[in-house]
Length: 160
Image (cartoon, rainbow, N blue to C red):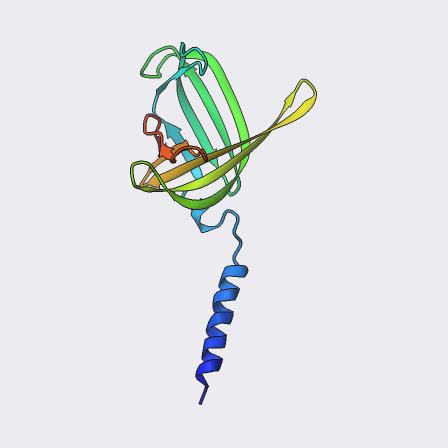
């Protein structure tokens, strides 16, 4: 007969192995993100002046630990007449913990890191954000240690 002490020891070992042997980087949680996402048409304004820049439609392709975002500019609110502007961004990401948002729902922290050449020097930008996938919809939001996390519902991505 196996003693209770041995059973407890095996149970603790299994829990320890499950916690320590699991890759804490992008694992099962990232599977819901992987794929191609297209945003609704939204208005882009200058962050300093608030002046209108363009209407934007995003194409976002997410892989296991990286993504590419293409912003396509349009002159009309329906995003049917391109203005010729196209910006592309690439970055890596790491998923973090679950957080409660201001509307009381759960979201996942995500750290985005991009590198780019700026007049011969490599610059790195790291952004803390949150995201939530609901069915085929993806929303991102702000994560700031000074405020409660909140999702942006003005821009919604639909999985393609």
